[in-house]
Image 1 (cartoon, rainbow, N blue to C red):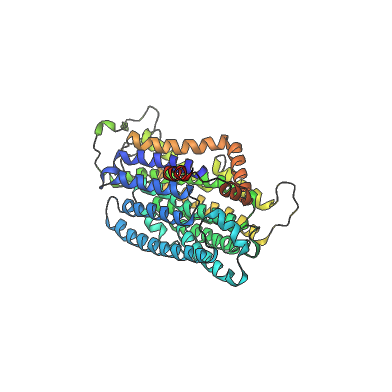
Image 2: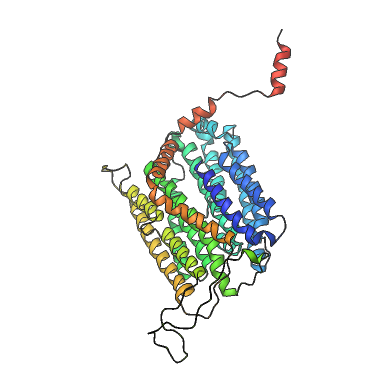
Length: 473
C-alpha cells in the first residue's frame, strides 16, 4: 500500500509536468506512461513470481519507449544499453524462477515460504543457485554496484518527467528483494535462513561508496540526481541485509522521503538548465507562461555605481530564479539529510537503529558492518553536501549574463506538490514511522502473511458454479 501511494503521487506529478511540453515531443507518450503505471502497480500487488515477471516486462517495455521519448543521440545511445541490460536481466529472472519452480513445485510466494524449509539437502544447492540468479536480476534493476553502470547514463539522458518516474522504478528492485528475502529466507527458512544477507550488506555499502565518490565529480544536475539514486539504493539494500526490524522500518521511511525529493530534483533540473540553453524549446501556449519581471538598471538612491553604471547591490531577483533557488535548496537538504526536513529524520532513524539493533535500551553489541554503514551514511551525506553546494554556486550565485527561464504553471505545480509533501513528512514523521515500523514487524513475521493468503477460500467462477448446480440432484 505504501509503494502504491508513492507511485501514484510521483505518477501524477510527472504527468502534470509532461503536459506542459514534453508529451508533444514524441508519439504515444500517454499510452506508454499509463502502461508503465500498470506494470508498477502490478509488480507491487502480485503474490506470484511468474506474475511478477509479467509485470516486470510490462513496465520495462513501456520504459524503453519512454526513455527514447524526445529522441536525440544521448537518449538513443543510453537507451540501447538500457534495453540490452534489462533484456539480460529478464532472461536471468526466467532462469532463476524456473530453478526455484523445479525444486519447490510452486511459484506462489506464500506457498514458497512453506516449502523452502522442507527442501531436501540434496536439492538445496539448486535452490540457492536459482535464488542467486534471481537476485542478480533484481539487483541490476535496484542499482547495486557493479551492476549499475547503465543507470546513470540512462536516467541522466531521459526527459525530465520520465526520469522522475524512473526514480520509483529503481525502488521496484529494492521492494522485490525486501519482500522475497524476508518471506522466503527469513529466520524460519531452516538451512536457508538469511541466505545472501552478507552480499546485500557489503554490496550496498560498495554502492554507497562508489556513488558518493562519483557525485563529487558530477558536473550536471541530472547526473547528480542519478548518482543520488544510487546512494539511496545502496543504503536501502544494506539495511535489508541486516534483517533487523527497526532498521528496515527506518529504511522504509527514508525510501519515501528520498524518492519524493529525487523525483522533484529531476523535474527541477530541467527548469534550472533551461536558462543555460536560452529556452530553446518553444511553448505551445504562451498565455500559460508565468510572468518574468524585468530587472531595473536604475539603482536606488544612496547606492554607489561602478564604471559601467550598474548597481553594486540591491538588484531585483526575478521570482522565477527565487522559486528555483529555494526549491533547489529544499531538494539538497532532503537528499543530503540535513535538518530540519524529513531527509534528516530518515537518516537519523537509520543511525539510531544501527546503534540500537534491538531497540532503545538494548545492550546488544554493534557489529563492524553496522559501524561501516554508519560511517558511509555520514560520509555520503558530506559528499552530497559538497557537490550540491558547488552546483548551487555555479547555477545561482555565479554572476553570468543569462536570462531567467520561462516557466509554466504546470511545471511549477508538481515540484511544489512533491516538496510540499516532503515538508509535510517533517511534521508528520511520527505517524509514518509507526506505519513503517509496523510494516517491518509484519515482514519479520511472515507466518501472518502466509496464513492470510493460503487460508483464503477460492471464489468459484460463474461457469464453475453453473457446473456444480448441474451435477446436483
